[in-house]
Length: 503
Image 1: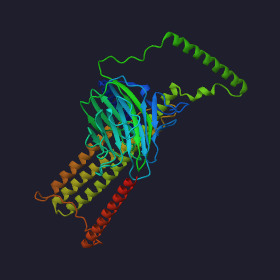
Image 2: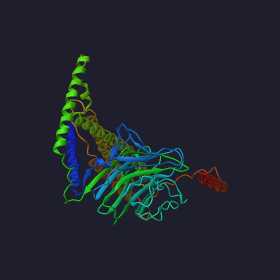
Image 3: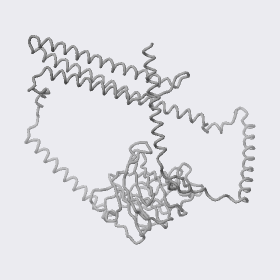
């Protein structure tokens, strides 16, 4: 019981250390000075309840084949020769900004077309040949090009193209001659939605991509950056897409816009105050609505006397329920981490046992071949190293037992009277590493003492690998397979070129 108490005391000390480390990291992050971000709802959209009763998206206009729905906007369906786009109705009035776009590009074919574009332009490009938007724009476009027009096998690709209103987009070369920056990313048919974060701050445009392989929304990686980029001080945000002979569904789930303010500058104030007359009008409407709601509640209670309380309010999560849910989620993550550490300790323990067994056998063989007094010395050294290894195994077993106790504590944390906590993994792995270094040093020292100075330790030779195939037959098989593969690729290329010309 005393040993268990000491083990638990060590666990809580490690828990306190982890909390302090986490708090220090959070404080360091908080100390980093960054731009102030303010969400701009008039330049954003997100489901659910995305569209109004008339099918319009608030503060946005959609054209072409775009189809808004409750949860997303389908810019183009997977039909041939489709074009669509959505644009903000009003121009932005802020100099620095950041947009986060969540979208899906899905199709049945091995390759898709044509692609999707995210825009910031001085004027709305409602319709046109550049991914469903107008050419000769003044601003910047970030293109997610899925079709390989130039035949260089470098698609899908993300391309940043700037324009001052005088540049015609080079479709045949996929904009490569006009690209300010680009990166190859496969954004088609991903298990999770793809996310793009585009930041324009201090005349630098940065594009980060979440490839959609994990549900982690913040799993961004760097794609491209353009410095010293001059954009119009006011402009429209938009997103467009187009299809050709091949077609994909281009769905946008959300478009979130943030205004960025440099540190030290005055934070933008909210919108202008509502006039007093409008305030009185809104207040009267609110009071009228509240009275109607109270009447409806009374009528409902009279019609349903068996219903107690107000069930409509139970659907909202209270502050206490939210905090409790967050605690349980954190405990579940801790539980999974400790289980993973326990499995790793089991692997280390098995590997250590095999290592000890192999070293003991090898040293015993070398010691048996030395006659007289040297044999007695080797036996003593063997006993010493065996005892050392047994001590290491015992310590690893104790760590595994301690890990099991911690796992039980975390598993029962949701019951009354149980204590909450996390386990500090870094200290345990450092202890294991230190013990393994001691074992390695003892073994090397023992082997060097038992071997002549001019002899170096050699690993046992592997048995010859059986061969059922001669070298000549193998090269013939590889050559035939290569010829067939090249022929298949040429055939598919001709078929795709013929299909493109046909459409």
